[in-house]
Length: 294
Length: 290
Image (cartoon, rainbow over all chains, first blue to last red):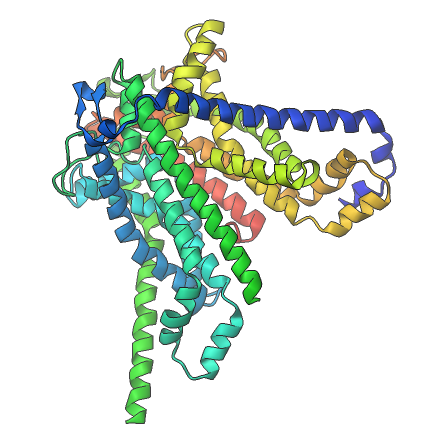
């Protein structure tokens, strides 16, 4: 880097003005291209989807393999899958994050092992989660194609996100809090429950929302763990079709399913946009409150 | 009384720490469990057929005992390479725009857009590609579902990854360098090209590795737009099937050796991802996600 900076001929080769102009033009062109494509996608989904969405669409059963009717059982299945996923991943994730942030030295073998394996877990493709879920939850544990299997598979998947955000939240709590608590003779357990966790709550909430967002947008891990059945699920032992699987099925396997796929896609995208805006709002608030504290 | 109280606290604290350790071990063991089950399910076919036949068989017909994975492997690598080649410059220039060209308000707005792009589920990308992009390409050069459609959709999907990582690593470039450039009277692009890019190189490489990982693992969007014919494509307009799409398409009805062969492709995917994570870890000395 320094070599390039100090060698005069590195700059002499550049025809000064014109390269600047071309670069500026090029960068604005990229921005227009990227935002244009995104707007095209969103406008297309909105335009074709808004005609489908109504109260009826949300509250009735799909008819004729999903070509007509609504998506009520699919919404219920999606909710149940996300519920199972969160019920399992929150205790695991928060516990792991607390251990990593508060009770383990960075260099201890446990900390290093858990961190490395979480980094790897974050990179595992969703289809591989699907294979694993099918082999472990459906077959070995005998849960079959069920909402339970799907939710547990997703729980493994969202764990890294949840842990990372909770850890960030805990790390953002000023060191002074811990020292003051220790000086007052408060046990670390009490410090954790009364002081650190409440202070780290925004981080936890961000992780929770990001996890839910990841869970409802997942398709590949669910097609062969929670299955395709589009009837109203009676318990978490039943197979249930998630919203994203519904869109996939309507688009690929059902001719004439496009309009209802648009409607479902609009519901999915709207939910995700709401989740993401809440996340950035929370993160912003979090940042401001930290400035006040420090 | 006082004594017993302290020892009670100490015991409860020890219990808490051990409980947390157990939880962390479970979280850490998931990856091992995944690798174990992939390999466990892959072993039968590897024993009966052997690893070489996955590259030397005549074609991919698991039902009639032919297991050539090469077309899918080539498909995955082609789609991934072209998508990364398209998305990397677009993503890095997007980050450059946010940091050095845009007025603050527009930069903030554009960042939100990129985050929005990152949050759209792959099935929605795939659906949009299927109903909008594929017919367009089909008009240009039939049939439509093709390598080109797959790479375009995929590059759109991985663009936010590289853009957000590049944006973060540009933030870390020391302002002193930028002031020095301004003092030397350098133009903006000259500064970015000669000072910012070399300084942020490690971050940019990490971004490329992360987007490559996403590109390899992406399933649904690529499956929906690229036609899924088992072949090595001869042009951009030929249909192609990736490893991930192959798993998603055939898992539903696969039994015995066929099912086992799909787990072999899962193992191959895990190996590639593992290599990428290892490179990223070395580059960042273990602080990839910190």
